[in-house]
Each structure stands twice: as structure tokens, then as C-alpha cells.
Length: 448
Ligand code: HSE
Image 1 (cartoon, rainbow, N blue to C red):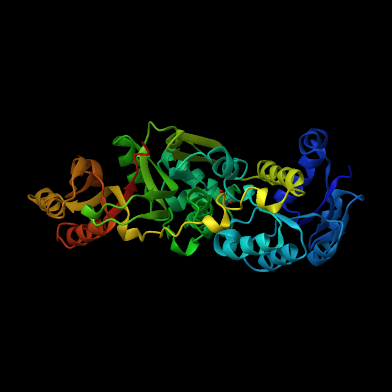
Image 2: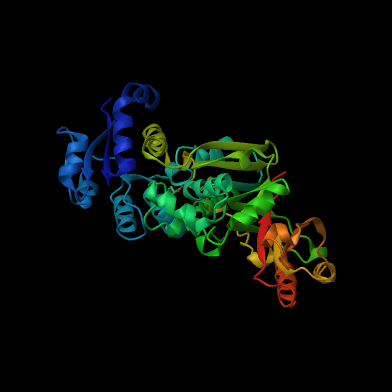
């Protein structure tokens, strides 16, 4: 059988990795897919550079629409990124009856509902393994491998840049800003790292995982997002002393309502720094690596680990999608794996819960005047709010602020409570004259 023909939009780091791996492993891939897979056309603004990368046998154009218009092309790979022209081209490719493979998490997290509906109406597939956690086949695991399960929660380190920064902060005892500069100098962090360090990239990815895990539409606008920019070396050190590591986690959980606690059914969708017990495997994922923990009712806890970015790891995911489409494109559309794992007419209407309704435990750091009664006042406020203390740590003032210091840090770990309740308690503690700086609050998950 003739090879299936693929058009590539954008040949940067991932595109060139995809081209190279397809060439290098073509025999192996053909044995798996049942026929060859050839990138026969590439669109890139830098035509000369693209042509040099792919050689004379591949047609290179500057106009992506020429690829979409080519009737010989069955699959279009979109590696342009962003929500702008990439969205237009993906919708045009679908309208032209092409299957689409994309690594564009931002596009699908924000416009997935429109894109998947257009693809279903046209009977084509939109595959996006590379959009979440790079080379880790987490979409495949959630959509197919874990299909027997009622998934309960997912927690993932799904941004390598921030995990690298946090690892460096812990190893070297440095603050965020210092490590970020170094990471940029070494090329680990982008010149504009906003999406990474503010948690937006992780939120795009956890939005996609949430939709697939619970069969709900993608709802990036409902995600709570907090990045790592306010984390200090001191918090990483105190967490360590209490047996925890701090990681930026993307978390999504199914919550069973409980009328007695005035809790409704819903789904949590959040990205924020998080204390996790140092003994958990995921707590030991260091550097730019990614890892995702999935808890299903039948399988229990499962962990997926690997490279979340980079040329060939991401190409590995793109090509897995190409193989899937090659195997399935002649199948009746109704018998393919649904885009979001659940049949489109069986999607759930479970609401995304606002952050104020999330129930979790907390790490609090209060910089206080080292004077009589401060601890009693602080613990009194927590007791009054019905928030139970799990552990406490207070160092001698000299150790915290240098010899003769009259200030110290009060570190408190709490048991679970609703975020709204914690917000109110923090406001009351903050108003105490002996609390000298803004209180640091970091959420804590046991991931048990
Ligand atoms: N910038 C991302 C990261 C990789 O640092 O993990 C692409 O999603």
C-alpha cells in the first residue's frame, strides 16, 4: 500500500524531530502502522532553512494553505502554536477533510470544544498526545489504558521549566528570581517565561487531562492558576524540615458532594505550588522531567514519568498519533476513540468548582514579632475557624533573623479545610499587629 501522506505546518524543534524520527525508524513504524508514513510537504516561513532540514525530496512552501489544499495530503501536523493563525489553519484543515495532529495545548484548552465539534461533524480525527507532558503517553493512558476506571484524581508535574527552577532552588538554597536568571542564561527557560512560571502552560495541560478523565468539556477559563514566582528559598527549606517537597502541580479531582458539609458535586481544576510528602515517588522528580499520577478506582494509583518537552520526546508523541490515525482513518468514525474519551453525546455537566470551595490542607508561614502570646492568638484564630493544626515548627529568632533578632517564622501545617474558610482565617491573622509580613500560604496534598 502507498504510504500515507503528511503535511507539516511549522518545522521548528518538534517538527524537525518528527521528520528525523520518522525517517530513522521508518521500517519499524511501517511494520506497526501497516503502511509507510511520509512527510511529503512542509510549510514554514523560512523556506530555505526548512528545505535544508528535509532535503530535496520534500516540497517546502511558505504558505500553510497550500499544504491544506493539497488533495494528496491525508494528515496535517500543526506545530505553529498559539491561538491565532494556528486555530484558523486547524479549522481549515478539518474543513478540507484532513486529520490533524497537534502539540498545541493552548489552542485545545481554550478552543477545544469548537475544534472537536468541527472534527466530529467532518468525520476526521484531531490527535494531541504531544500537547500534554511531551513524550509521556498520558493521553493514551487516560483515554484507553484506564478506560475501565472511574478516575478520581490526577496530579502532575507537567511543566519542565518550573520543575527545573524548583529543583535548583532546593539544591542550591536560592530564591526564585536568581534561579530564573540562571535558567534563562543556560537556555532552560524561555526569554519570556510567563506562561511557564505563572502556571498557564500547566493549566492548559491539566485542562485537557481533566476533560478526558471526567468526560467534561475543556474549560480552561474555570482553572485556578497560581505560579511559582512568589516562592522563597525559606519555604522550600521549611517544607523539607517537615518532610515535604514543593512542586508546581496541575491537579484535577472529582468531588463527591456532601450535604452535611454543604459541599456539592463538582470537579476541581487547579495549578499551584504544592507541598507533597518527600517519600512519594513524584516528589523525587527533579530537573526538567515531568510526571503524572492518576488515581482510578479499579487500578489504584499509577505513575507516568518521562521527558515533557524537547525535540525527539515530543516527536515520539506526534508520531504515535500519526500511527493511530494511519491505522484508524478508514474505520467508521463512530468506532474510533472519542476525542475526549467519552462519547460526545455522553459528556457530563459536572461543574468546575471555584477555588473557594476546594478542600485541601495548608502550609502557612507567618513572620511574627517574637513576643508573648503571639502563638496563642494565631492558634486561637485557627481554632475559632474550625481549622485543625497538623504540625508546627518555630525556630529560635537568632536562627531566623540573625543574632539579636526579635522576629521569627511560625510554620503551621493544617488538616483539610475549605479554601474560603482558610482565606477568612488568614485575613484575621494578617490583621494581628504581631504579624509583620504578608502570610505565605502554600497548599498541601498527601497524594495518598
Ligand atoms: N514549556 C513547557 C515546559 C514545554 O517547560 O514544560 C512545552 O509545553
